Length: 345
Image (spheres, rainbow, N blue to C red):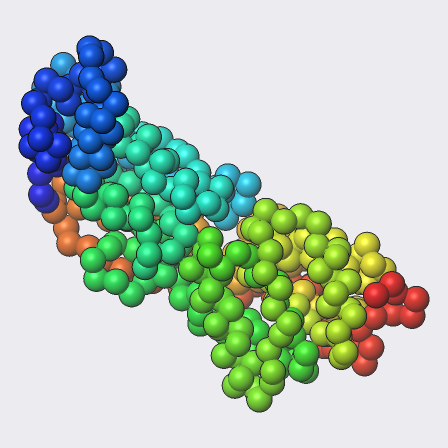
């Protein structure tokens, strides 16, 4: 594992003395604005992080792991954090948790805070692994990390995930086996989630396999709760869909509520499926048909691998865990007419 950058490297890159870098970081002494900006840029470029906790300690070990998730509102991430915390405690570590609220630009700032608190490694989910500035930032800081939920496929990063494409393709194929030919999709923001993109691709592949035209596909924010307007739009299509695939369980639950507000029942008038397998979906009425991700196990396996990297220098690896379908009550064979008489469209 390569050594983290030092304050001397920052000083060299900025063309100033170590004392000047120290004054900038501590906010003490007289430093020009131009010099401060130059030093700040050198700190960002090198990935240098001061030891803000216990600077006098001789050990560099903090016994802390950082955790960054997209949202604290979606229970799927809470399940993963539970697994992360359990494995961290078993390994003698504690965790620091933060979220990006599905905003890619916030990921770097959140990681910066974690690194300034001397975390030894991170378990995180980013918007898009292939273009992430956050991962570039971590690389410069020479801090080991393991991605969770992001899709596998790169040899340079450790990732614990499922096959999002295959899972979406399978659940949409099941809808087609029930007799559905008009299947729409409500998806979370594609720019905020590479998983959402893969689920759309799996949906489109399943439709193409069946000789069907996909769509409409409606893109919404992951925290969207009122989908009545979008449900109304789907009902106005000619012909209207008989089934709806949602890229998360939370969006599926919001869609079921939206159809109810328009006088439609699920699955009598339209089938709805989700993706994630959050526990609350089992206790709804109707219970939610969905793809179940082993989120808690994913979190545990991510920490176990991270500790192997920290303690034994283990190489980066991709681990794809199995998913399963949960056959809830929210899907059924299609009826001839989706919208009941009198439904406002």
